[in-house]
Length: 447
Image (cartoon, rainbow, N blue to C red):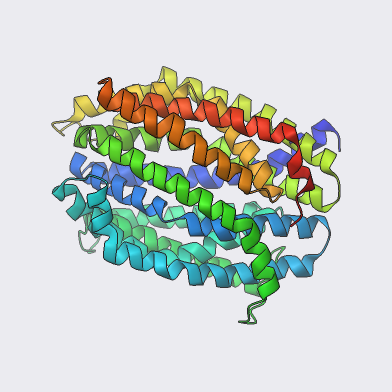
């Protein structure tokens, strides 16, 4: 394929993933804006509850990473029957692995928030959010794996449409259940959790209908039997990804605990900044998905040179997009942060001041963040999930956690020191991923 053809194909796969995640992120922003009308305590509680929810997601990556890599290989090799089998087995695995995660959230969520250093007020509100949202984790897990299978097959539009459906429903239900409109009960923080869960379930049912009807590139053919050979292949790729995500989540748990110990105002500013930045890295996520699928398919075709060209073109494209996003964060931080907290909150001025500093610091690292997404996606799409594990284990500890503590507590920079360390780690991880990619061993991975 010519460079132009590769860029066109990358964009065809990337833009639906970008749009789907922008949609999801916008809804998260709307969530935070709506919750923000309840005050900074509610922002900190829902933000920390959502952070804990993210810590519980590594098992989802075990299945989704292996699923995407295998489906991409089989689609590249024109073996559609095995691609369908991967989808079926991933659905069963996702359901089984979701049960313990659900139970942890429902019964141990308050203890987790306490370990993170939250105040009793934040724990009470945050746990009320967690208990409800985690009840929907089995459906969330299955949908996540099914979306990964479709993306591996080169269909990023169906996940986009279902994601947009989820998000439209979420906004509507948020308005009804957080504030108690049109006769619905005013549930405030619990309403935000219930709205998220119900919207996921409705979109999931629509997606399952499409799979069962045979409308998609992949067919879901339930036999309710485990194919242990295929399960082993999914997990052989996915288990290192799970370990990586556990390490990632564990380090993030420590990191957010450090941030939390600088006080509720610092935590609220961190959550505001995080929500704004989450829009900025959506292009990177889209190119991550596109690169993963095309690298896997190219290797399935037996064409590693094409796979390498895909990565180079993706790096060029993501650098442009993320450079623009970084400039926006640096030039307009105050205007981006202002919608997330009501001006009547007594801490408004300080939260906005700190959120502005956060956005300027992370804006500097948006381009290397894009490289991490593309290069990590390329390796995982090739079935190399061990290298990202090593990068995460080394970089986050040595270049985020340790510097956060040193800069924040020992040198007295406070929460700003923790944010500087986060940017340092982004640059370091990008360099490590580039070195691994250039070695080229990922081209020889057998799945």
